[in-house]
Length: 363
Image (cartoon, rainbow, N blue to C red; front, side, top):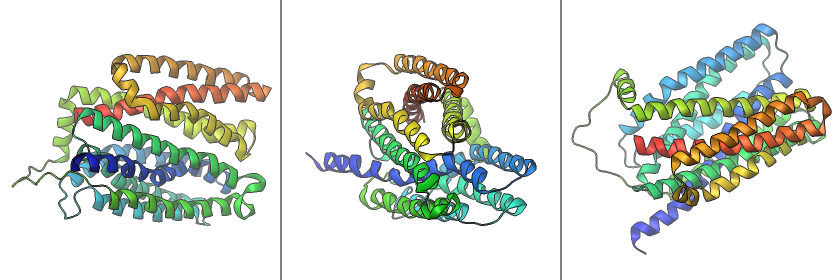
């Protein structure tokens, strides 16, 4: 085994481990922030509408923020490389933001204003470490098979982080097992724990991974934001990938952010165990996909695999729809909800993997 192979083997272990805490952060914000707001704050219709508008505006802001951050990272030159400085700054600042999110006692419009400031700050800080983390993959492996391995393993460990958070947070934030005896106290302490774990896990990547560093060109061309957009629009493959990725993320957001927490709590009761079961069973099929995706992708052409997963996802959505009509039946309705989530999530995550790898190859 030569030196390059030795470092690649080491990177395949240490790079994915770094994202466990990052994705616990994402699960906390994406799946439980609205739950925290709804069940620990007394807000009127206007204030809830304002929070919804803030979240939508922040997502639109992300569309502008992501390419700008990517350009900043690309033009970063330091003795630590161009990725690791932003990984460090991003994860530390994100930890501060999520701690403040869940440890404030403000109410009414004061809370709404703080929510708006923190939500946009989270969009900026999380983008710093997210873009730099996934952007590091091409610097770890130059061929398509290596990128498949890094992407699938990183996605697997990302799934582990988000799944553990999604299973444990409901258990210890609701009902008799709530830390400190109330949801407000529980969410505050959970946020503190995750705010500590995220930098600790990412330090494994920052200090343990060795990426390939190409020597900087004598004079790098700097792009304006308009030129970045024009470059994307001229790449028809990237445009279609972006559209598919957008649809996938909308579907995933509806299931996890909508059905995953609020719908279950309001329909089947505000008990953490039900949502934990929903997440655990729903993610079980996904774990299989994460482990075996490199082998599957070598046997099954990407286009054919996407067609198969689209059918599986549609079947899952059909079960979700049927479960809505049977919600009053209790066990049967919940069983169909979990089964639908498992199938739809299986198809969704395969799309996610394919899109991530396609973007890396297309760019």
